[in-house]
Amino acid sequence: MTFDAACGKQWMIAMNKTVQEKKDVLTELDQAVGDGDHGLNMARGFQEVVNKIDANEYEDLGSFFSEVGMTLISTVGGASGPLYGTAFIKLAAQLKGRKQADLPVLAAAFSAALEGIKARGRAEAGDKTMVDVWEPIVTHLLKRGELLQVEELTRLAQEKLEETKNLHAKKGRAAYLGKRSIGHLDPGAASSVYLFTAFADVLKG
Ligand code: ADP
Ligand code: MG
Ligand code: MG
Image (cartoon, rainbow, N blue to C red; front, side):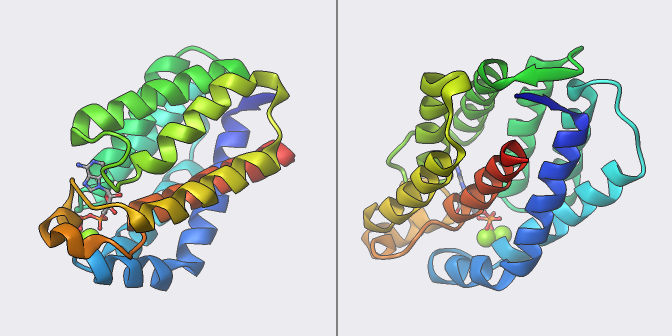
């Protein structure tokens, strides 16, 4: 399969649709462990992304993802804006000059995006953040390459989100709760499941 800027647009449109529908779910998750704005942050950010990319044409995947990343950074005030923004800017840097990318190339770009998130947030897997979904997904993408089965990808993301429930938050606002964060899902891990599910849907065609 090959992924181009048109696929990127579909991905962002699908992600935006989900976050608008699930805004309240994300808000409730963030009310339990944070400040209750993750639904609003994601809904505002991805709506703005869709508005931007809708009106423009992109020469390559680099310029496309760079616009996505910059838009998220400039419209989302919370921690998640710069973190997702960094991820897309890293994708852009990896895919610069490419009109299309196959799965192994995308997997390598996602790996750089994950490193960007971890560096920016100083988080590791197990800290109860979006990294707990991103890291196993990236490992899976790198391992499977062209043999990827999209259903497997969404199932894995969902499973890793569930596992954040038992974790003790070490980063972000939830860390202020200490052990009381145990028993709640991480909001950013939930929005990351939406992101990878939307990605898988585009791959399915
Ligand atoms: P804020 O916490 O500033 O209100 P959001 O509510 O939009 O921002 O996003 C919270 C999510 O961001 C968390 O659930 C977590 O997944 C992610 N997050 C927060 N801090 C970090 C960090 N240092 N590293 C990785 N992810 C983080
Ligand atoms: Mg919040
Ligand atoms: Mg906030």
